[in-house]
Structure formats: C-alpha cells, structure tokens
Image (tube, rainbow, N blue to C red; front, side):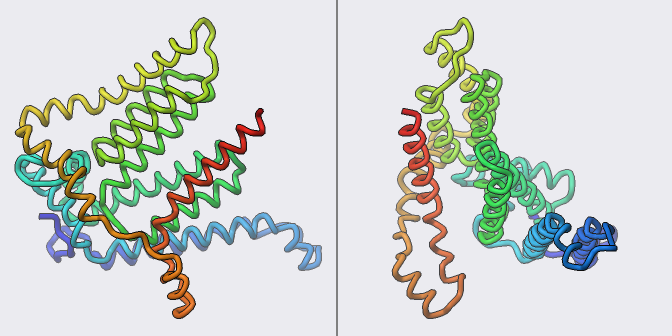
Length: 350
C-alpha cells in the first residue's frame, strides 16, 4: 500500500529535510525576484527612480504573490492523505501495481487511466503518496497554463494572467489532491485549444488532436470525457468554420469529424477492447454506466447553497471562508458570460 507517512529507513530521504530544502528553493526564488530592481540611474530623485521602475515593481509584486501561493499550496501537499477520493486512487493504484484489474478485482466508478498512471509512477519513484501529489501538482500547473493560453487567444495578456491567477487560487482553495477530475479537465482544455485551431484554420490535424485529448479525458473521467465529446461534436457540426479551397462545407465537416473520431478511437479503442476481454460485461456496465447514471446522482443530490444564507453568514463572521460554498455557482456564471458574449458578438456582426 502507498505509504502516507515517512518511514526512517536507510536510503530514504527525510521528509523534514525535503520540506526544508523546498522552502529554501522558494526563498531563493523570491529573493532573485529583486534582481531586475537593482541598477538603473542613480542621479535621479528617489521618486523619479521609482517612476521608471513601475513595470518592474508590478512584475515583482505579481511574481512574489504567485510564488507565495505556490509555496502555501506546496506545504499543504505534506499534510495527511485525504480519506476518500485520494485514498481510493492510491488504493486502486496499489492494487494495479500488484496485478489487479479495475472493475474486475476492485470496484470503482472512475476511468482506469488514473490508477495506471499512479501505478507507473509508483513503479518508477516508489510507493509514496507524495509521488501522487507530484503528478497532481503537475496536472494543476498545466490547467493554469492552459487557462492562460485559452484566454490569451481571445484577450490581452493582462486578462489572461488574471484568469490564470483566478484558476490557481481556485485550485489551491479546493485542496483536493490526486483525483482524476483534474487530468480530465486538463485534457479537455487541450481539446478547447485544438478546436480553436479548427475554428480559425479548419485544421484537420487539430481536429485529430482534439479527439486524442477528449479520448484521454474519457480514460480519466468518462463522464467529463463524454461531455467534452458531445461539445466537440456539436462544435464541428454547427460551428463557424473557414472554407478550405476545393472543399464543400459539408465535405469539410465530414473530414473534420473523421479526424476527430479517429483521434478519439486511437486512444480509447485499445483500452476498451482490453477491458472487454478481461472484465465481465456486467461488472463494466455496473461500474461505468449504472452507478454514474442512477446511483451517483442520488448520492450527490444536494441542494445548491443559499445565496441569502451565505450573505448572512458572511455578515456575521466577516470571513471570506463563509462564501466558499458559493464556488459551485462559478460554472453557471462562466456559461452565462460565454452565452452573453456570443449573443452580443452575433448581434454586432449583423
């Protein structure tokens, strides 16, 4: 089983020393941020020198804040393993490492990719929960970078930076480690970037890449992957695409659909065939279809938090933590803003 606490055996690196070393790295990084502020003209008054350094000061403050957020999040990595989602992933990875197969030898409603990726990392780096946390940190860093890249495609660098920082703050706030939802989200964001290339250049390679990304999301969280697949297919079928020379609109969409489906099947088909060969069909259907469609919605059928109750609690406690449950409304707000933006752009183009 993956170890959640350090064991003082020969050859193991002390966890305390590892924490101290990482703190030193963050401290050095924060110190080096001051280097761009050094130098410049010294014959000017102090306020003039500060005025000339405003861009560097802004970059220093923003970088210091971001590194500080990473440092705080990094310390949370060393806390104990959470009992439910992360524990299930570590347990499943440990079972896979010893030859068991998901859905046949142990029950789970997650896709298989998370268990096999963690098992591979355990094989390479050792069976420690910290290894899974490292993969989780890399995936979340990718999500932040992808959020920046997507917003940058449609707006200024400052807006993209603000969006990336908002995503970073949300990921730090969630404190949920090792769950397959984050790799699925990262893969879905890759598909969004690829579909943007489809929209601007009708790129068939980008359509294939979008299929590969959506297929990867399916293997981590098949429900999120299915949503991404439906959204991608709707976009390819009805989205505005540039015309390619010599192609009809219908023929071009068919070609894009074939490339997308091919990329998806390249990733999903081998895994699906293997699972069907080694896992009874009833067990697969129960874990991947019946539970997500019938059982899980009843378990998670909680009412949305009340805005009035959250406001009243904030007025009483004067703490931003009391507004934390309202984070569930962010997707609704994001979709509303996206729809309003598209409606506005369509009306202007007319």
